[in-house]
Image (cartoon, rainbow, N blue to C red; front, side, top):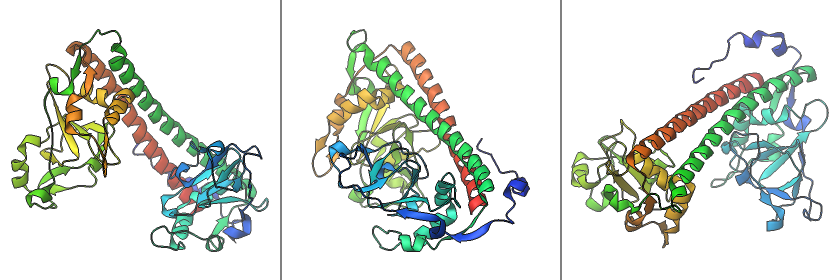
Length: 402
């Protein structure tokens, strides 16, 4: 799936014959709907949609707020209308409303003006590369740029006849369904991993079948690093890889942003040098409590003071077992419960060392970790396929409507 490519001859099909396509402006065929509802609860509207509820690149609204919790929004949207995030348009926030709601003032509500443009095609037009580029280029403001309807209305594009629009929309929605299915598969596998971790590890607490141990009792070392600046060193473009809390995500490590430290500083901090399969835990900031294993191929490496390094004692606990204990919903909630609120929320190294988990026998851990690894491989495949199908769908969209 990662090598999916378009058939170079597909655009020659009669369906995509452009001889009857007409150049129009966005504002000629699309209305910027500005219906208001001052009393949404009284009107029976239960949900509101903020800019944070629109997922970049996705046409589906999967989260929302409840009007009963309070909202100042009064712009109304209806099913099948298209929502477009006008603030920071580069974030590519477009979605199709599937229910009645009130929306943020930072969201435009679009609908076809007449029968020249099918509602089914409008969201893809708004999702096209040319439209986004135009929206970004016509945005004003430095810190929080916003695009203006007056400018968007001037966007010009080639509009197919209605019969072609219908067929094109069918193709694009079928592509979207594939992308959506793979995303849901990835999320379902992730939830399965969470449930398996919770039930397998913490489900044994009440039975006392397994001993409860502190992390410090089943590891060879729990430590953290330092900032190079404290010791008079600076980051460089080469040297030893340096890991910060920005690199640590739940269950996986990302290399961006890449930072490197001099070999001399790495040797000075040999106590917190990272080895493959060491468990890394974030101690500070917005990523608080995330954990992952250090993958092969990125060592030698070191960490700063915002990341704890947990080295497993393989005779007592396997790295994946430790990671699962920390990243299961139950484990993560307990880890976050140990945070201290200062100028920044943080978890002390002592709290990590004192973290308690039920410790299964090693043979059981081996079997459990194999199950988790297999699920992670399936999730990685679903994620990769989701990405590939998403790129292909976007390529088709841009070639059709670009």
